[in-house]
Length: 326
Image (tube, rainbow, N blue to C red):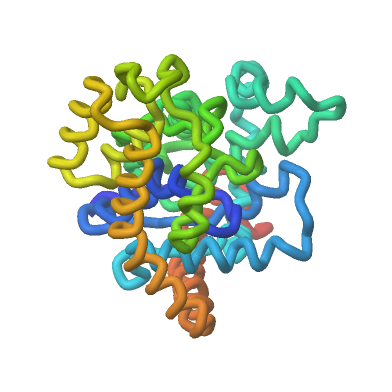
């Protein structure tokens, strides 16, 4: 099978944005590809964080991934820092990466705008991303549209390395994910834990409802008698992801006709979320009660990845003349 690589930040518990944006797709892809799924803690250190919390955040992310259906028996699930070859390859690839290409990265521009002092790691972030993929000779990378620019840079880095030193890396192809544009519950920005506008996959129903009840919907629907516009409502986007087709159709129809109010729509979504998330929550509780299972899965994944990583780096070093002294 073709090799597929994808990574996720160790933000702690998975939220709905993570799940719809990546993880639900991973569960399907692990049946079709040889998958490498990485908790990218090296990437996470480019932003301010509390060091004492990082191990726990990575552990909770692993619990969430496994509870959501990522199977360590089918895919290599590992923590990036357990395979130090990622950073070695990133340094070697930096030798063929043009600064101009990095300066054009949209995400770098957006994240650096608010910073007085920009860390080099934020600038070279895409080089480490390229190393993550190329270290395993990844052939396929599932991405949303916002990551296409980074993947094209990875392809450019692979081409430049191969042209200068000899063929080593395939140029990974994008597997464009059909992901709904999911805004946070505030209706203003993308769902993000740092912004506090998320729902965790593991939250109990009362906590979910406390967040859903005040969530922003269609800002033009001021009264219950006003017809709604499901196409601009973030709650309806969640219905399409978690509710049965019959309920989605009914909500669409009744919202437009003002036959239901926003609170009714939210109550039905809460029911749909509980149906989908209860099995995940139960599996997560079981895994959290047996942390050794999670640790063993990550250790096995890291060992598998180290073997593949060492093989690639031996080849890279030989091509670059970084071999034993004669």
